[in-house]
Length: 252
Image 1 (tube, rainbow, N blue to C red):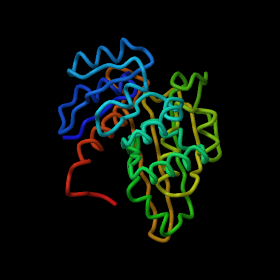
Image 2: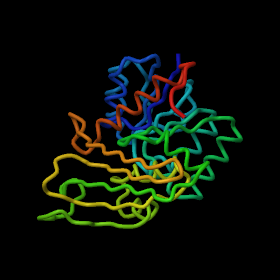
Image 3: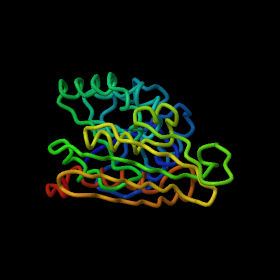
Image 4: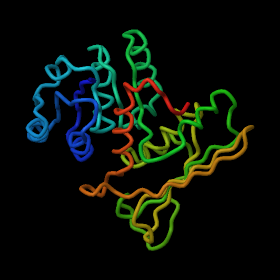
């Protein structure tokens, strides 16, 4: 059975902790100790107030479910302590120097870094772009003005450009654009809209290449307990964890 250390004990941490899978969370760490203690009591695991003690504990893999800042702060230390790592805050990997640093570290230590599909679909087939480059890769995301904190009375384009620039302006809102870029090996184009008529996040992916065309539309419902979190993003982590030990691998 895979044992897990949970880094970040917010809404996604709660969803992961409540799920009964073929793995067990044995260690918890959060900058707010009470959050870690709450989940430890729920699962019978151990809460740590010190990150060093947390990362040195006996378990197999760390799930980062905290923030881009936390991923950047702790990722290399996790790997150096010979633990695999799941990064939920994939926006951290928009920084090429950080990405290269942790990939080099993982290769040296013989460990794996996993990126869940998050709030979108189709990452497996977009990997073909590393073999046959895409002629077009566009993410069009539409969110409510409230979710971005941008007032608008009608549908308004608030960003148009590359994924690595968009994540700098909206670090908590367009992690999916970085996931697309990582899967395809090329910087995705991004259009970000606010629309007072929408009550959920809408992600549209347009991809064209020698294989033909792909169009994917995902309408994300928020997590029941936190409207700022996509429920699909949380479920994608559970799916990843549930398949780590599976000898049958589906998808490229």
